[in-house]
Amino acid sequence: MRIFSRIGVGLSVLLSLASCSAPTDDPLIVWSNVSDTAFFVERYNLVSDTPVHFRYIENLTETLTQETIEADLVIGRWVNTPGVNTRMTPIGGKGSTDTEGARALRSRSGSPGQAIAAPFAAATSTWIPLSYNLPAVVYATEHFRMEPSFAVTFTGLSDALRPTAANSEPPPVFAPTASRDGMYAIYRSLGFSPGVDEAGTPQWQRRDLQRAIDTVTQWLTDQYGSPEEERAYVRDFLYDPPVRRIEANRTGAVYQDSATLFSWSFLEDRRLDFRWLADDQQRIAVTDNIVYAGIPADSDAPSAATALLKWLTTPAVQVELVEAKVTARIDTFGFFDGFSTIPDVNTEMIHVVYPQLTGRVPAPGVLTVPTTQPRYWNEAVERIVAPFFARPGDASVLEQEIRRWYLQRGD
Image (cartoon, rainbow, N blue to C red; front, side, top):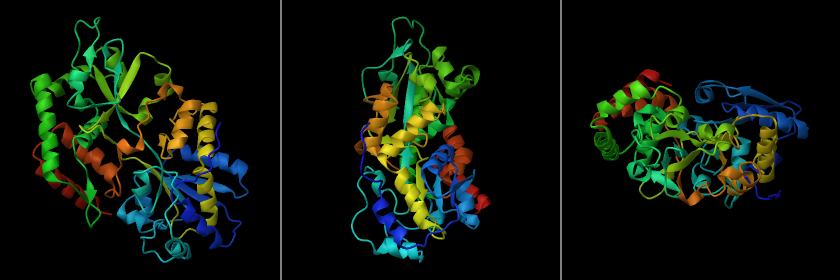
């Protein structure tokens, strides 16, 4: 196995914390909403003199904004939001917190480490991005085939996915509303790109959303006769789990993201294949649930947190952690349930652990990465955005529903 020497983005900056804080005998406290963190902390406790305590927090964003932060290191999804960012130690020198560690970070010159690939390296000045996932379209090779390709667009799926000769009565090619996550990924691929306004709530270009709504509506009309017919087909025939639907020849393809897709069963099953879901420029939108790591501004042990981060973002360590997960029969994919943001790790990880994915990992240059997200965006998508996409109206309606939900949700 190769041993890599480069360190993840921001660590050259974060290492300055080690000289800014006195040693402590207290344990390092890690908060996370990612299950793999517990296993990685356990492994770190075997090689470190600093004891590390782990706490799993389901709604990590709310805890980080509304409670006293008693963590020294945070590893989580959905945390890169304006409200949380103000309580974290800035990495890129843009923050306003006035802790000793933050002053040290702001005083550093030069660019962060180059191991983490663009566009992740430029995605945030507060967090170190650790892992990510991608949207995929899955199909059964016994029923359908695709030309060798890297990705497929939503609008091009019906032409790209062709029945095999044995499939005399092929089912509908795809049923978008069968998966709420899939519908959201489709709209992302069609240009829906939520940003953040000054209040931390979502904003987007209404014309882009309306264009995506019209595209999906027309596709459903072309394939099914109307969106209502597609929803009726989903209700009557697509009640099984996604892979079972394509194996039973109820639909040509289903949506799954890479974390869900790349289980042991998929990697051992030669009857299934996939293509990444891309836009018409062959760019792939990274799913919103990127895993980040950061140090709170009020951390009592920033140097110990930095040491853990240095270890965690060492490429050779990342590969070893993935191998250890496989040995322990932990069926979550890759590094923190996704691809590493360090390209060399993916190359080695696939060579050593996932040879079935050789040649299937997109280069960073074709990825589009979400940056700062609206607060509680995962909740908003689940409760408002995804249900709206399943039965869309005018684009202005979603804006009204989102505004109402945020007023009710509060902080």
